[in-house]
Length: 452
Ligand SMILES: Cc1cc2nc3c(=O)[nH]c(=O)nc-3n(C[C@H](O)[C@H](O)[C@H](O)COP(=O)(O)OP(=O)(O)OC[C@H]3O[C@@H](n4cnc5c(N)ncnc54)[C@H](O)[C@@H]3O)c2cc1C
Image (cartoon, rainbow, N blue to C red):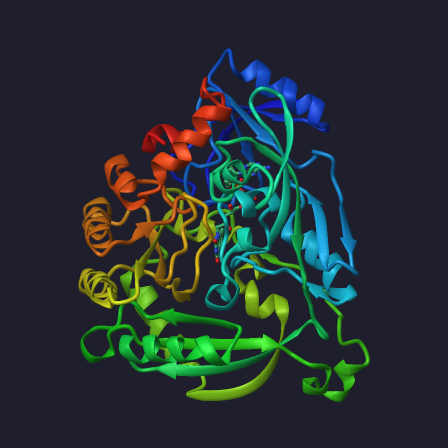
């Protein structure tokens, strides 16, 4: 088993903390790691470190890198399921699944996340309104709990532990394997409709309409636009393309999936590269160049779902202080809170070129799962933006008053009291966690900071 000291951060590159990273290869090694962690500062699992904040860090303790843990995956094409080791990346899965005519039931905006990370954050994609979150597609999980026991859980087997693990941020056990359903597809391409929207109301109306018309939908929002243009954006909606949708040359190999090599962001970028002026220029150009209305464009799945993966380490563009992603959700009927947050960001001139609005459908019965029916907005902001903390604390108050919540996988700065109030099922989750981990062997910087 490999062991190294490292200074770890999440994707936002804020709040680094030192830990001993262990890389077990078997469940027996993992169980031994967890038993040894009981005497020290505990342990937490880590996938590819794509959570933005401190969920996969454990200052002064152990961090379990799951990459070598019983690697591999099996597709059961007849059952329409895949069983994958927790350290498997969604990228590796897609490279195997797509040429065989299957797609992931849910994918976040990057495929550089692991199956374990997808379970622990209960990730959502552009199809939440149609297909809910990752947890809705899970048939079973295998996890090692802090007592070293290997347990197989599912919606009909130790259901309370299963649902506490879905969205449970790695604090109920280390997932070693997951079985979930996959979606049969005829091609690896997407049939995409694009609309330029003039303001927030237009974006919300078109996203609502998409519930009936499109499996996938998402709206990029220009949060620097003000006044009548507040919330203007570019909405893209899609379905998996049928073979007949493809141009004749592409029909010869309709399931081809060869995502191109990613370019790498420069190691050193000038400080404050992303400031209000540069981002305003980018946003205005992006909005103006988007087609007003385009129908049926055929795009590679990777280009539609994971455009950011084309530039490796793009988080470096924010400079050495890193970035904060603020993602919140508010229920339907609370569009006013969404509008006020957009207004404040625009008035502040907050330089965000990555602001994404989505519509959530039905949630899952997991107490810490983030998505609930309503709207979600995710905004990337430079961590050294003056006044950022006060701005975001004000947003927390608005979100809480609207009955909403922030996403734990993205959080790096919320107050414990706010998060406790945002997740009313937290005590139900704690009862399960107390049962499987009475000595708090599984801990993270996030769990300490938020008193989970
Ligand atoms: C560019 C980008 C776009 C994104 N888009 C989306 C999106 O659209 N939707 C969305 O929902 N999320 C999105 N995310 C967030 C990302 O999907 C989640 O943070 C995911 O959990 C990261 O997975 P990971 O494997 O990197 O896990 P890590 O970041 O390493 O860990 C995340 C959490 O999972 C736990 N964990 C990891 N492995 C295991 C395991 N084997 N057993 C138990 N717990 C484990 C960790 O302890 C930690 O709490 C995005 C992130 C980035 C960087």
